[in-house]
Amino acid sequence: MRFDGVGIIGGLVRDFALGGRDAFKSDLDLVIQGDPREVAALASRIGAVANRFGGYGYSEGPWKIDFWALQNTWAVTAGHVAVRDLADVVQCTFFDWDAVVYDLRSRRVVCDKTYFQRIQSRRLEISLRSNPGEIGNLLRAARRIIRWHLTPGPVLTKFIVERLDEETFAVLKATERRKYGDRALDAFTSVAQLRSLLLGGARPQTELARQMTLPLD
Image 1 (cartoon, rainbow, N blue to C red):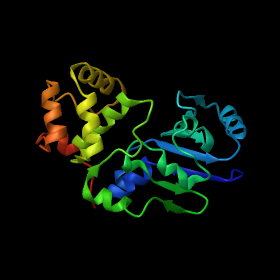
Image 2: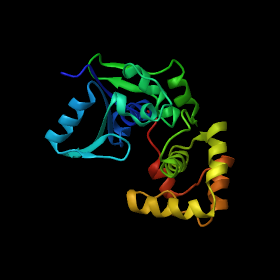
Image 3: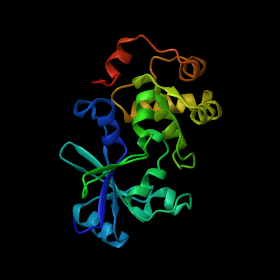
């Protein structure tokens, strides 16, 4: 609490919005409003490891936690967004569904007034296209559309059309096998099959798809 503010961004709040406590399956991403040198000192004390996006990561019990100093978030250091406090972090996320912060000090959810309507509409869109991890975001987009039965918005649709090809299809499948225990892409044998599902709105009627769907109540 010696920092000016600490917020949980994205996953936890999004998952609670989707399906309550039982739906939470994400890592914890924290943004700390305070002197970046003090955040670095905190990282050193707890043995956190620097990540390639300007933050730090460590594990605590069952939790995998990544945290950043507010001024060191990638969108800020790359010059895409100006931030003054935690509320501005909602401008920094790739997906609009992640553009939400829970302020631990005030116990307040910070998002724009259409956030929960967008969740309810089941349409996933890009909020900030500029991002250093495009392949990772393409994989997350595919997994979310498949797992949560979503429809991509026009900007995300354009992103998928531009980036999903034979080469990236192979990379996505290999990356998913390496990073995730549950695999959504193993059911697809060609990039055309995956593109058709992601862009056309058809939903797989497989046992895997049913198991991976988040609860809605």
